[in-house]
Length: 125
Image (cartoon, rainbow, N blue to C red; front, top):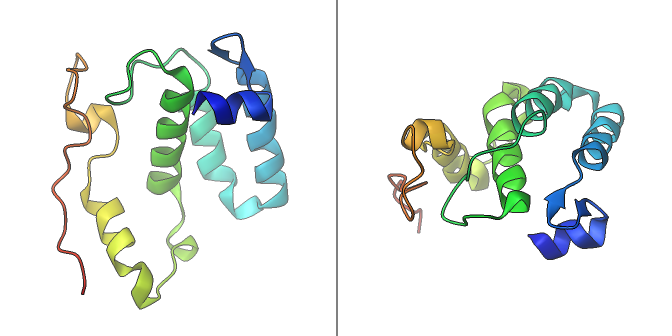
């Protein structure tokens, strides 16, 4: 993740440049207005403060922002934004059933190796 953030210019040393990431999401919302509610959530939840570790990757703020943003988009997408195609059935079920946010997995500490131990839904053949 650090490499991606560094290449995008979203790192200032080892810290996430939240202003640049916020600007990216603002542009995304401008280009895709239907995603604006999810973007507003992501900016407030993932970029307004320093995040606790969001998974098993300790001391990786780029991962924390990506994980928080991804879960924010999953949880705040409008129903109309989810594809109803059969090939998307499993991802839809997974996103609905899986506790992808650390607060849903455990609290208050982040035990190493415990996040996102989601119950997996059966794979389709």
